[in-house]
Image (tube, rainbow, N blue to C red; front, top):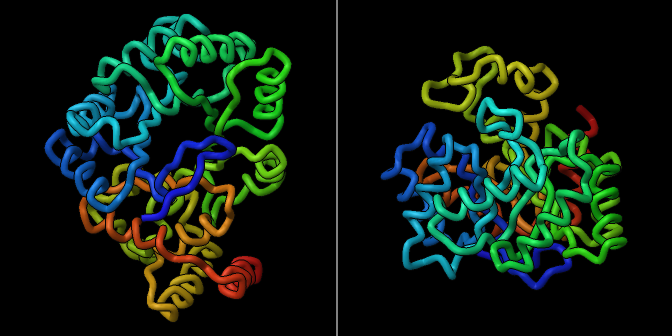
Length: 313
């Protein structure tokens, strides 16, 4: 496994991270712990979760899996998503942030979180309030680095500007949906991250499994897959154009003795600003395949060929 700095920080994270939104939902505690152990064996030290994953069970399972191993792992968790019916049970207010930080610390069985992310922008809360609360959490030793998730270019720009104006702890990374199929991130947000040396952490690198090649055009969705549980979600990917792209990409990957999964991850990691690619897994085989993607350094010629395949379709 290779490691990269998280943006301009000195924190080293594995170029392939472990996404855990299946924990407590598709995977019970025993299977979740096994996945964590397999990830650690593969050299993955970056584990991504959120307070809402599995209704809090994802954090709890991770905390149990890391007993005696905490210092070797970089834990990312998030706050802001709706977790209850009360008016203050969501968002990025100081009140909600402070409460959810304490809850996450308890579930994760730790006294600090390595990377704490604002899960979604909150239009009802001034960004200054959120950033001052996060700064306090860092100064208290409960959080080491902060970041944002699902922020547009202007939203991340506003957040960075406020940290500089108010001399607050800096934003280390932006986590965003980004893969070969969904490339809106490239329009202007990527340019901002490059200009300000901000770490990029893509999630859904395999387009929710579409880029693994497990889904076949005009064939039933396999049982037990993510799209089997959410068939309406599959419609956003199951288009003629996307299946044409997938066929060409699979042919390219096969010609280089790599899997489609490996190509999807390696393509993202070609960008040096990508600190870690968050890839979910439900078993050891998927962990190994994801990790192999982190070992593949695409050449300039290979990257250009893949980009041409994507552009021509």
